[in-house]
Amino acid sequence: MVQKSVILDEASIKRSMMRITHEIIEHYKGIDNLCLVGIKRRGTPLAKIINENLLKVEGKSIDVGEIDISLYRDDLTTEDDLQNPLVRESRIGFDINGKDVVLVDDVVYTGRTARAAMEAIFSNGRPASVSLAVLVDRGHRELPISANFVGKNIPTKKTEIVSVHVPQFDGDLCVLLSDKE
Image (cartoon, rainbow, N blue to C red; front, side, top):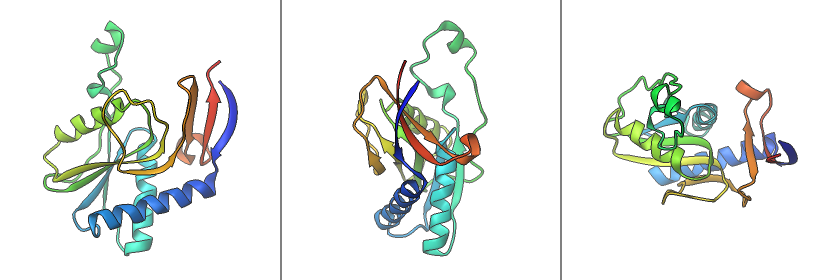
């Protein structure tokens, strides 16, 4: 990969995440029936940021879980992938039945990850509603899926890569745009 630019720095991400938090509160008219589920890997730290923001704004936090979508992907391409998918543990330690679930992810691209996450959610229960919050929407959908809450829309080429860095995995907080080599 050849890095082209920093699209969002730490301060920009924090502002975007606070705006998403306020939009979620406004949309749901509070947070009483709300829970957050981060899509592994980088959606989980972003869900935790939203929850920290909820604590600052609303004075309380809500349930936060994480979900692994490996078994729900429809784009596993090799026979080995289908027979031996890499499965990570999902952690939803609360009842999602009747709850308003906000799925949180770093980037929405083709829509396949969001579709898989919805399928995984419904295998865990029957929520009242499911919405999608993403830090970056880069376009190029292959499925009719759109995020309800978006930090930044970034028009990209299919040959570009959008990388969200989070401290837990990368040591910093930023969004980078790179070219595939």
